[in-house]
Amino acid sequence: MADEEDIVLSELNDEELVQQMHDDLYDGLADEVVEGTEILLSRGWTPYDTLTKALVEGMRIVGIDFRDGILFVPEVLMAANSMKSGMGILRPLLVETGAPKMGKIVIGTVKGDIHDIGKNLVGMMMEGAGFEVVDLGINIDVDKYLAALEEHEPDILGMSALLTTTMPYMKVVIDTMKEKGIRNDYIVLVGGAPLNEAFAENVGADAYCRDAAVAVEIAKEWMSRRQGSALAAT
Ligand code: B1M
Image (tube, rainbow, N blue to C red; front, side, top):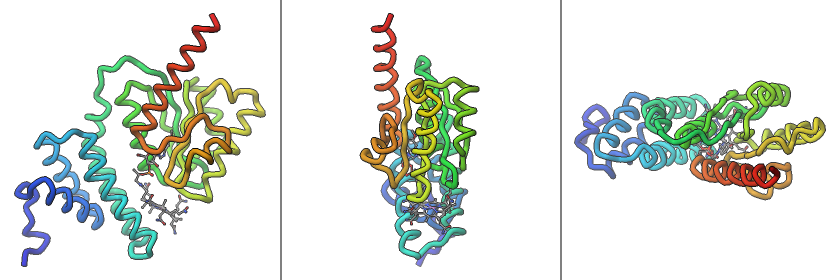
């Protein structure tokens, strides 16, 4: 019976390798996840397929066992760090773009929430699509969001939340923007696993983004709408 040491990743076919990468991500083996990522790329896989089929899918499996009490925070942190190591290889490839500048987005994970993998992915994909991205990080309160809007003057504000307990904070930010009379100066996009379209509408966001690819599409769509109405007003 082969043990872990005997597995040579480069000798596995694509399907076996992706399966092994899910296992390595689950076990928090960052070096192996990086090696698997490099092998898939060397076999002609696109950065996006490598990201979604090997890394994001691996993290989805981790999430199920975390929910079911099979994995605990320390193990999930190791899995998250392995995912980030793989993303480190993909990042320059995803952001490498000759695309004309599309606009600017300020993005952050809301107060009380430290999940950042999804937000980071959105940032990378946005950069890849030609957006300038200002990433505020995690645990961002309303004052920090507002200060960043003033400082960076983006077109879009993006907020991420992964917890049902933190997602209502998006409404605090949007309501404060309304109070200050600046809500309509920005396109507000929200995302994160527990959200949905109805929630986005309830909190007063412009749109809910199911995943990073959808976030890019929606951002582009809203930018062209905005540019269209700016032209119409002239
Ligand atoms: Co946490 N955690 N976690 N966790 N964690 C979840 C979210 C959970 C669903 C797990 C579970 O029970 N199945 C659960 C939340 C339950 C709930 O609220 N109903 C949970 C919990 C309970 C907790 C703690 C409370 C656990 C504890 O301490 N007892 C704690 C809270 C800490 C805090 O934030 N205050 C906690 C801690 C952690 C770790 C630190 C261990 C780690 C985070 C590490 C890190 O991010 N650096 C962690 C992880 C990794 C997860 C899971 C397993 C994976 C999240 C992830 O990275 N997914 C997660 C389970 C799950 O989601 N299935 C879970 C991969 C990522 C690519 O997807 O983040 O959904 P996602 O992002 C997507 C889309 O949602 C969208 O695009 C992204 C890319 O396609 N998107 C946006 C996201 N943000 C967007 C913003 C946009 C647009 C789109 O703006 C425009």
